[in-house]
Image (tube, rainbow, N blue to C red; front, side):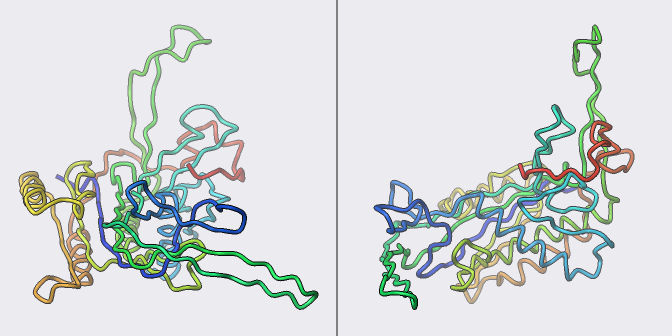
Length: 319
């Protein structure tokens, strides 16, 4: 069976960070996002943002990238799935069109990054000095001292660079009718779909573009990683680093039973496979495996859904 999904879950150490700060408290007192149990977290939306920043850099330097492929800005996503990797992997929504043509569900999903243990925070005093007068703006910023952040990314290979087109049997012209058939259409050739799956895997290794933290060199690059090339659509392994030893072993048995391939890396254990080696091994196996492809033909997204033909240059909003 081909690979239907790719899941990467990891643990990354972060020190003195506010990778995804929350709302201001009491004027200029900026607070970090924190769960009721005391663990700080980074939202899934911020994780996706950092992922696509990494994806853009990797695509830019990829020798196998076809001419014209790129990753659009998050505030100006197109619907050109065949060229725009954010439109493909990140989905979009065009509010001017009703129904499937104006909406694409993202093949890539992300969990929030959550600290493995309760977090201790400190406050940093900021002074903004003015050379024009004697006024000084004073603010405090909350930082988390030291966290191991657990997160996961998942790619649905069945919808990567592909869409489903539905046929409805309408009893009258005014009624859409009943769904009677589904057709699968790919928007990129098989080799490009495989390349995008590889870029997804590589991008999960270079998560760095956190809000307000780029200049502070806060990094989400994994210290531990568990990669699954799965024959089924499953996200169960996203909980891997929140499982006890028994749960982890039973998960691996379940993956073995259905022929899934998994790779584990741990840079803290001298006897374990390194994170680098885990990624290299996973990429080599992915290159040899087939990914799910249920389509019979290849065509552009706008061509697939005729309702989009009149909106060739219309920007969409990421979904």
